[in-house]
Amino acid sequence: MAVRKLNNSWWIDFRFHHVRYRQRSPDNTRAGALGYEAVIRSRLARGEPLREQTVKVVDRFDDFVRIWIEDYVKPNNRCSEQLAKKYVLSSSLIPFFGKMPIGQITAHDIERYKAFQVKQGYTNKTIRNRLTVLSKCLVTAYEWLGLPGTVPKIKWPRCASYRTDYLSPEECELLLAHASGAIYEMILTALRTGMRQGELKGLQWTAIDWQNRSLAVRHSRDDHLKELLPPKNNRERHIPLDVDLYEMFYRRKQATGYVFLQRNGQPFNKDRLHHAIGALCAASGLRKIGWHTLRHTFASHLAMRGVPILAIKELLGHESITTTMRYAHLAPSTLRAAIDMLNPKTANADFGQPAVNHWQEAQRIEIAQGKPARRFA
Image (cartoon, rainbow, N blue to C red; front, top):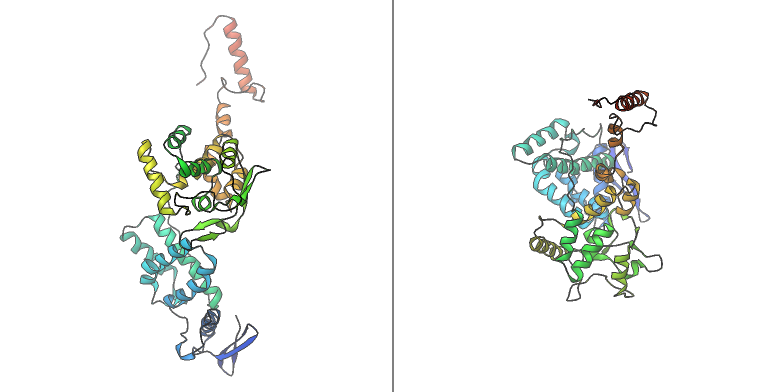
């Protein structure tokens, strides 16, 4: 940001595409000049003509939100995330905070918003999601506009711990037994690779490495744009193929194009896949699940078989190990071994526990003398 005060007036002064823009701010304050500069830069980035009489100084929350959507949300978020943020802003945040000066929103205002949301019957999880959008918006405003003071602190509502649903091996076999065609192949691929729904829809034949028997997750198909985008977190990852998947793909190997297509030759969309898995659940008598449950199943089965949590993280493509830790409780735990050490019947006598060794030796002598064995309580 480039603003300066000249002769008791605040001016913006910056270069854009090698052109210098130097104008007096209509709001003669530093914050007003910064807001005015943000508006001018936004108009230049969109190729709009600069008509000073139509330029509005950023002050209110709803004014800044319009700039934030254009200059932050659209360049940095996927289509689905953009839609989610726009919905939260238009349906909840703007109606409450819209007319407030964005630099004057306080922690008390946020607490009033939380109380209002509770009265409306929203869960803590929903309120937390909406506060996440508000928090990022406020942080960006203070950074872009150079607002005085600090961003108001948010006391996050407590939410119940995340509970992950996954299928048992028997349920996986039951689901596959009722599937056929491309849907069968997509379900099996999800169960053996943990790929997200968008990644399955966007999987290309060129992503399969036949020599190393692996596939690269490079794309995710967006239903709104109808095009391939980078996967979540922009992280390409490589997943080894087991024997079943390798043979399944090899039987209909092609050079290019989508791996999974509908009968009409078109890529799958979210609605078609949602309907397909719902029908399979009904036919097989399973509870209603979504495609993401198959990803949870992949990770949960790996954890239960003792695969290191870091390896699961890399296979899933998580940005943070914190996300992967939701599966850690399923792993064979040393906690059981620790508790077993308290019981002489299950403790290892050579582990260096003198008291246990003495009890075992005393019991062995008593049994040899024909006395009944004592129980350790």
